[in-house]
Length: 207
Image 1: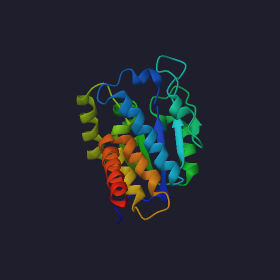
Image 2: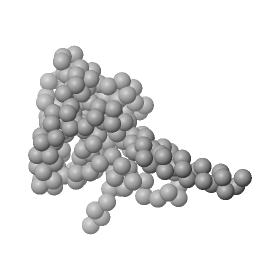
Image 3: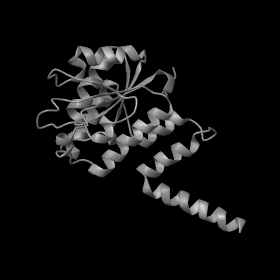
Image 4: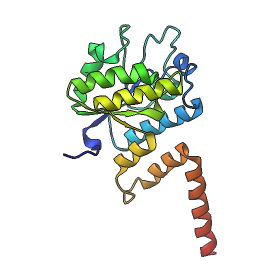
């Protein structure tokens, strides 16, 4: 059995990345979380992976979707009718089913609720599920760690933005390699410094 993800069979679900909920996140820096979520969406766009977004009561204290997510090109937004677990919303499940994909990449806020509940529900429904922890956030590191353990024990693949992106990319021998390099430079400033140093050395060697 292939244990690696295939981009042709994947859909990205970005759940409840909302301005109010972001104010409660304490297990990752907010700027890093925003960068990682955007990077994940960019990787999906490069590989033509369908993106579905949703929000929990956006007119209430949870707030609207982040502008970066709400305005993402080609993403399908699915409204919910108060369901805490997005998988309990028939329109959301229908949107996922309509993609025809059987591997779901999920990120959201909070990890313990907005990621965990639909991830476990989708797993029970027969999907292969990836939870992207650093494109998600929760109220404390302890809560996030407990959730990671719960998800992993249930069979959800727990991973990170860079690891998932590299798994999808597969090779540098591709026309859009520079676009993938931009993703890593955005998520990992030290990698950006390494790239800059390499380019500088090449320029000096040619002069």
